[in-house]
Length: 153
Image (cartoon, rainbow, N blue to C red; front, side, top):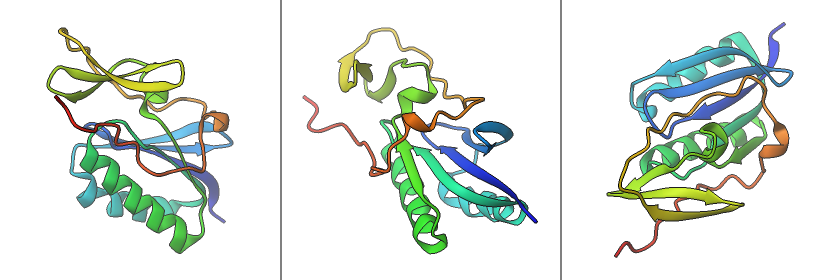
């Protein structure tokens, strides 16, 4: 019998990070520098051979548009085909609310619960980490991507 787990995916920067959680606790980490469109099917094939996946979680932005789209389409498809619930939260949950690069010198910042863009002269290093304990209260079943940038002037 396979161990029942939840899977968390962060594809906003390289490396892609996948966390395997048993009863909210991180038990395995998978990282890859390959393109998410190439590696996600292989990673998840291995996961489904080792575990019974109960829930899927991901960072739905802000960040790389293409990475967010690929992650969303991939996970939404898995969710529908395998009848596994999908949940999402913004990327700030995974980087201690630090600014996230948008375009040029613009960065996404989260003030209270509102995400805005702000010009920053000094670029902070953006590091996303898998939490050791997954707080389900931080996630929503509203899983559409957060693209966040309209016209840039």
